[in-house]
Length: 177
Image: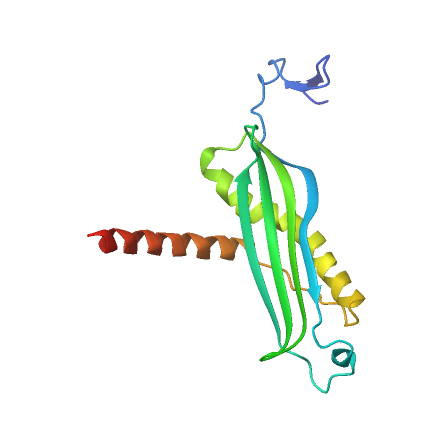
């Protein structure tokens, strides 16, 4: 027989000891809204660009993340994921797609040092599958095979951005001297 008993509220107490006091509030990230801020697709050489290509075009993908507090709120943030995709060789552009996809997030019970990593790593990670699908759909609707963007390492992007900001901060004081 077990020495664990059920208490009236369904919690279990061991050996008659009272159940733990109020548990610590767990951190949470909630998506309040998702939206397309800007979507652009250009195929400057259509319909000639739609002919079967002899080789796969070079595809360049640019990624940027921006986050700002939502005015009038305490813990809500607007996070924007920008994807730029260009297919072509040199000046010969088959297509260019640009998407700014945003989300409004509520962050609760996070320590101050965790807010930026959540905003620049976890929030764009949650938005990315939707933005990826939009780029795939628009490239397919433009007459090309769907562009399936590989997963993005938002942690590495965040670390790179921090390193760039530190380097910039070290250069600026000497420039003012």
